[in-house]
Amino acid sequence: MLTETGMDPLLIAIIAAVVLIRIGLHFYDKSRITKAAQGKGWQAVAVTWSPFAPGWFFEKGERHYRVWYSDEYGNRCGRYCKTSLFTGVFWRDSAA
Image (cartoon, rainbow, N blue to C red):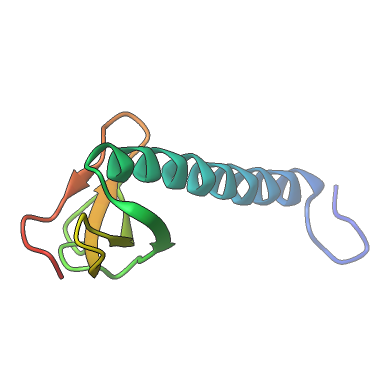
């Protein structure tokens, strides 16, 4: 059955569910990444989604983030990492 806009209510519900799940995963990822970074001794951690980070092209089901932090000397540094629902946080080898 179509609504006045011509869209199926089931389709609208599915799209809304997908968007809500993605938003939830983003906050879950940020929490895990922040904890992993703080476990390395990094301070003032800021995490931003980076969908086109280096290495994104051949990855499936993994989300990429850019992480800014202060190291033990107070230097501001940035690195990329990736994560997915069932894996941990994987850092790029080189600081970017």
